[in-house]
Image (cartoon, rainbow, N blue to C red; front, top):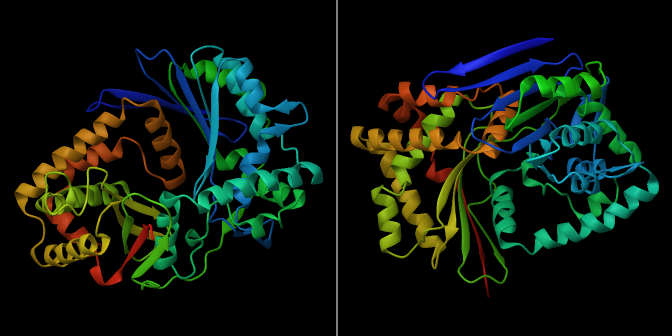
Length: 422
């Protein structure tokens, strides 16, 4: 077992990493002055892991399997995990993303019992034909709810406009048709492939003691033998599928997402790449930028407008989203500005202002347990260390940002997704 303390003088923060004998990576991030603890355990198995090699053979599972497995793990032979958390006064939840699945709880008391429930949850799969069939009706209703959600449809329609083959263009929950194909055998195979403790990480943040967490882990975790799994993705071209997609749903103002597709990569973006993109986007269309003010002045966006960089294995894109009375005009203004910035680059003054803004945003993130836990888990799976972003901001130059711009914001490789009423 390895027990390591990691510190950062710039932020005056520290945490502990424990490579447990069971295979699980444990990260404990104590926060002084916090009276509650937040714990999240994640596995590197998300919705895009629909085709992989496990135990020497190629496996293809129905769309929505990772999400389905998340639901089913809360059930066990001795009861439902939500009920157990309620009895000890903890608040629990779980989520499946494109790249991972996480199970979490927050509590002010009964931390030991709450963590024991979490460990039992991920180590005690219980799937039968009856319970799996019962869940199909529940998840089918959830899928139909998302099908009627403007926020969700505008995003998934965008991904279908950007990506030809990559499974990011499939709904995380799958479809009513695909989940009907899920069986206990499929769930057990996915569990064996990805819910191995060597493929998982636990992050505990707040009122937490690393030695207490270690003692609970020693008592509850069963040693697991490493398994070899490798996810398989189809080839994805650089070009987009189409530059416009539209769906009719009842909304007040039309909702839109404008995505700029980039070349995907076999690996994840580095902390330097992420921070450089954040500085670039803030200078380009942050609240202090000329473009943002023009969009507001012409009433093409409102205060809900924002941007993000979405990246993972095989997919990368910059996305702008919000509400607009005229999404096409907003998109045209953003695309024109993207072409202009490629010619002129970012100025020194724009760069300095954006860098200060991003530094402040990153520093503020260390005040939130959920954000820290998420960054720790993401960092474990992507190879990014939580303090590296702050250090990167201090070292990044204007030249770094303008070089990064060469690979981003290609107006000719963008798609506008709109959801509006009739």
